Length: 254
Image 1 (cartoon, one colour):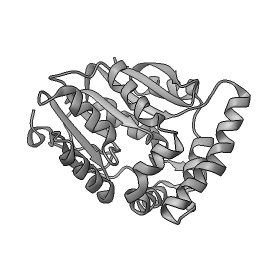
Image 2: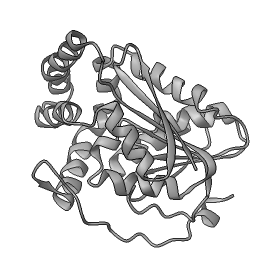
Image 3: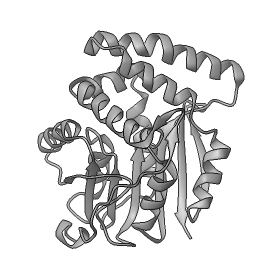
């Protein structure tokens, strides 16, 4: 399936939910501005703030999700392309990998990364809540560290499931929620102190990393997220990574 064949739908904007007092459109603009500001240093922030574990977690997505040659894979909120590039490397030149993100600055970084590694990924600028693809277009849909940034989480999940074929897998990598209360408190303390300091040193800005820390603190618990995935037509399991520092959700479209 080519990109031209996959793009068959218009892209209407969804407008419904609000997140902790921030309206949907307001959050959309805020998140867009945030990632435009930090795009040049985003990869450095991820590596340093996760102590290098973020790439290991992405490898877990690829391995546990059964991504192999010949599949049609969509990376939603692809950002700078780490997850899409891992999928493309796993597939070689078989199958199809498409990365979608609404931020041009992040996609520009992704394109450079793809070219430097000699991989084949098609990049599209688009809205995760109005994906420009026909129903049942992909064997796998992946999203890394971005569901908490969606202005309407349920609408975004529903769109990802819509473009997934029956029996296909939605693979969601998110920040974690350690079950151990002491570890969870330490993790949040790290996010609001060390991680924010790393972000400030890299970019000269503090507010994007304050938001990112708060978005982790206020996000759904694993059980709540599993229940949300069930409401959009999937059977889902939760896999804690690195003692719960990251969360992998494997959802199969029913």
